[in-house]
Image 1 (cartoon, rainbow, N blue to C red):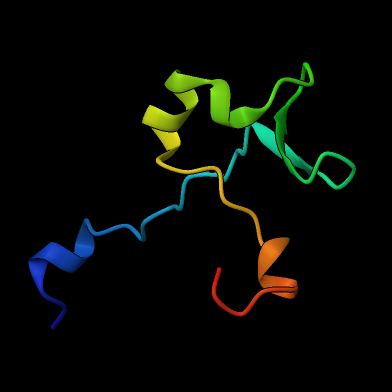
Image 2 (image 1 turned 135 degrees about the vertical axis):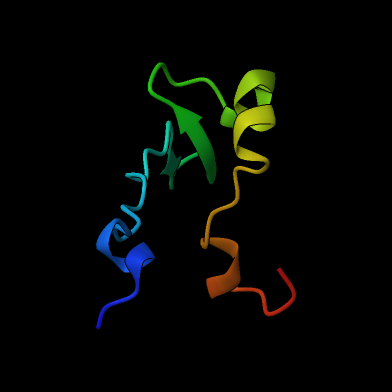
Length: 63
Protein backbone atom coordinates (compact mmCIF):
# COMPACT_ATOMS: atom_id res chain seq x y z
CA UNK A 1 0.00 0.00 0.00
CA UNK A 2 1.25 3.48 -0.90
CA UNK A 3 1.72 6.02 1.94
CA UNK A 4 -0.95 8.74 1.99
CA UNK A 5 1.55 11.61 1.58
CA UNK A 6 2.94 10.18 -1.65
CA UNK A 7 -0.47 10.47 -3.29
CA UNK A 8 -0.09 14.27 -3.15
CA UNK A 9 3.67 14.74 -3.42
CA UNK A 10 4.91 16.38 -6.59
CA UNK A 11 8.49 16.58 -7.78
CA UNK A 12 10.09 19.96 -7.31
CA UNK A 13 10.33 21.97 -10.50
CA UNK A 14 13.58 23.91 -10.59
CA UNK A 15 13.25 27.60 -11.27
CA UNK A 16 14.65 28.63 -14.64
CA UNK A 17 18.07 30.23 -14.41
CA UNK A 18 17.83 33.76 -15.72
CA UNK A 19 21.12 35.60 -15.62
CA UNK A 20 20.64 39.33 -16.21
CA UNK A 21 24.24 39.86 -17.25
CA UNK A 22 26.74 38.39 -19.71
CA UNK A 23 30.51 38.17 -19.82
CA UNK A 24 32.17 40.63 -22.21
CA UNK A 25 35.58 39.27 -23.22
CA UNK A 26 36.80 42.63 -24.52
CA UNK A 27 36.12 44.36 -21.19
CA UNK A 28 36.85 41.18 -19.23
CA UNK A 29 33.89 41.67 -16.90
CA UNK A 30 30.19 40.99 -16.66
CA UNK A 31 27.94 43.60 -18.26
CA UNK A 32 24.22 44.28 -18.26
CA UNK A 33 22.18 44.33 -21.47
CA UNK A 34 22.68 48.11 -21.73
CA UNK A 35 26.48 47.75 -21.55
CA UNK A 36 26.97 48.93 -17.96
CA UNK A 37 29.24 46.83 -15.71
CA UNK A 38 27.07 44.43 -13.70
CA UNK A 39 29.04 45.11 -10.54
CA UNK A 40 27.66 48.70 -10.48
CA UNK A 41 24.03 47.52 -10.23
CA UNK A 42 23.45 47.32 -6.47
CA UNK A 43 19.97 45.80 -6.81
CA UNK A 44 21.41 43.01 -8.96
CA UNK A 45 24.13 42.31 -6.41
CA UNK A 46 21.55 42.14 -3.63
CA UNK A 47 19.42 39.70 -5.64
CA UNK A 48 22.22 37.49 -7.02
CA UNK A 49 24.90 37.84 -4.40
CA UNK A 50 27.76 37.89 -6.91
CA UNK A 51 28.49 38.41 -10.58
CA UNK A 52 31.30 35.89 -10.89
CA UNK A 53 32.35 34.34 -14.16
CA UNK A 54 34.69 31.47 -15.03
CA UNK A 55 36.96 33.59 -17.21
CA UNK A 56 39.69 34.09 -14.63
CA UNK A 57 39.77 30.51 -13.46
CA UNK A 58 40.96 29.42 -16.89
CA UNK A 59 44.19 31.36 -16.43
CA UNK A 60 44.59 31.66 -12.65
CA UNK A 61 44.46 28.72 -10.27
CA UNK A 62 43.63 30.87 -7.23
CA UNK A 63 40.43 32.61 -8.43
